[in-house]
Length: 453
Image (tube, rainbow, N blue to C red; front, side, top):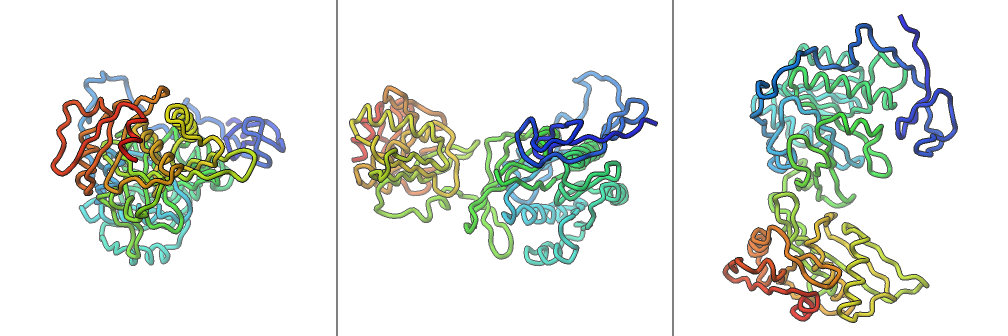
């Protein structure tokens, strides 16, 4: 039998080293090198965590092309997953402490169990009594929902063998450890080994598995990046502290789109899905305030109306500040240059702050026209009509370019009571104006500002 060797591994990035160093040579993190035992490979060339031995087969003969998805009971959750839970999926759910990750998965587990599936919820951070208190608060009462308080992976595998669940929830993956490694739970080696074993368990027995992952102070999931490469889906549960609104966002999904979001609201009895996020985003919009504009944006296949806020004020320092939240700061700088060059507004000597309300991130170029309008509104201290929305991409020459999904954007605006839509002239052709909605096509930024003010 080969002798086990020791090595030092960075707990931040996973970089190995034959000897201890004060700072990792890969990520330059101080004090992150921890000693681990390097377990020799098993005899016969079997890979650790391998699913099963198999023979080559023709791709067209592989069964299971049309997989039946299992609904979670949350339509918003199903939307992010791509239509429901796929048997054998291994998903990683991350988010800030206290944001509601455990509550979301416990509610989903209870609803899936209520539809007849056997569900095993493994908690390594709470006692059974604590989990039962949360279950009582959210009304989880399914007979098919089983609870296991355990941190040893081998004992979890034994219970999975005995119970044979269709859904397995691990809360959290950082608390599990395998006895094959001498390092403590949460180390890079343990995380890699535990995830590999859970992947083999999920794929080999077609058990849908959800892992709760801790996040670092930077908002990324703790542990090596290989952890995110191993799983099928990486979901982030986001929200502003002190605000009940929550967003579930997929940054990786092998069984669906990564452009979809799910909206939830945290209440006393748990999480409730928000079927009309646009109304929630605009619920607290201030009336008669300059610098406030509504944009018709897209998140995946869903049109959303989001408030874009801008504040332009004279600077009290030598260098003007440029701050953007929810909008790319480089894009804001570009739009400021276009606005000054094409309209003559002198904003260069002012502090500029741009914010997408509700914690949203506006990544698509269709928000350009709204950002320009919000900046001009704040600089001129002129209020944009509350019943007007905008969308369109702005080019460096000041032209307003057409975007996709114009019909759905206008329909969403009409549903929420907006009566005026300023849109690119390229989107106006062939677009029928809905009843009680006026369409104002513009081809340049100057025309848009004239229509607004």
